[in-house]
Length: 553
Image 1 (tube, helix red, strand yellow):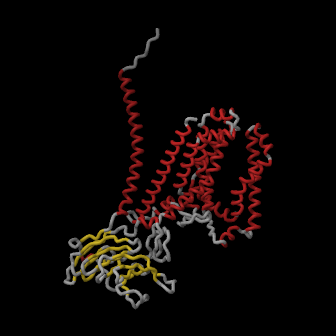
Image 2 (spheres, helix red, strand yellow):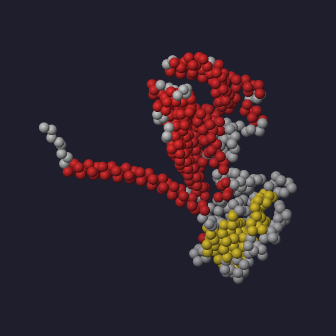
Image 3 (tube, rainbow, N blue to C red):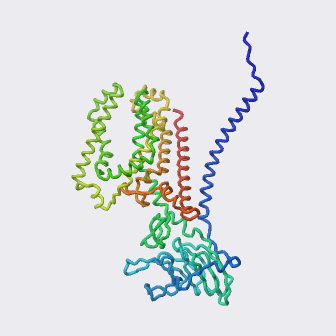
């Protein structure tokens, strides 16, 4: 007689404790991931928050040690007399720091910022911006050293802090000294000494650590000293003390989306068509070694791809630009032409083993590439004077060696395995019965794929494209090494670019912690983080919508 094995109470307790520990460990891991994401976002938000804090003029009269402060002398004050280089300038005008622009008070109560434009003979000054002042009587101005800020004051004691470039009134305060006789600024530009006619004094501390930042300068064209018109400019360093940082996210955003767009244009057709052919037309034995071979390219280091693109591919494309463009545009057309001419022969191959068919197709592709390259050389000789790059430059199209074409090809190769793998998995997951049913109703194999399998797998294919797009947005090393890193607002295929991710890699080591440059870089990282998060969320929502739409099939 069989006897059952009784489980002892101690072993039952051991199993309950083990199961409880495993559940708690899994729960802790999930919570840790969520906390890490939330902590990252909170850190980025906290580091960028000081950019948006308002400036202050703080009374420090009781705490100032006068012997430790150096005030600018009258000779160092940047006042400008009417009889100097600009006789039309009214009395009381001052030079801003750098001596390239002038702040001028007008009788109507406006304060004008005039930028030097010495190459224009008729009007050497450009009116860049005007500021309204609260009072009109006896307005006087003082420039702040080391910045584009300045102070206005009147005898009634109204002190106003401005920043010329951003066009903002940073702070305003009313001094108890009345009448106010003079305002002096320290050599470091952080303190003001207010002196009344009867000798009383007051010290004000200028608390404006990020005065040169404005949300408008990030996204709107802005006029800077040394420029004749407003433009989108990103430039954070220079070799002169007259330089002021220029923060515009527009060229960086354009570079980011431009690189991702050209990469997707190259990667999506090849990856999706390869996934369809592999999943729907190849036998299992052949697919078992083709798919891992394609996915192996995903593990290829992007720094190596960037090195190859910058040092080898970019100069090679410049020498043979016409051939490269001919290969990209004529090869698909010639393949379709050959398939049309030899249609019966390709139909005859359908019943043959896949390996000889693949070899024959590869040979046909090689012949097509050779013909396309030869046609490109002939077209360059006939229509472009034998040098397409020189012809583009003569037409006003600036050709840069490291450009969008190079980035599109190399970064498209980098994201292609990701799109291929996920799209192929989505097509394989479609039940075979759906395709067999369509073919039983009279559809051809290609019609069954287009009408049945692709709509059913649309959610997975869309997710594959969005994941590839997200990787392209965050790609760093390829853009760092092969894009030229020029922050320009240009969508040209032959112009360079700089992306947000590459800009972080370039400038983050140079930025001093707590500076405006540092916090603007953190802000760009926050925007990039939010962009990828929104794109992934959108992909998930659309994928779920498509899944609900097609799951009845």
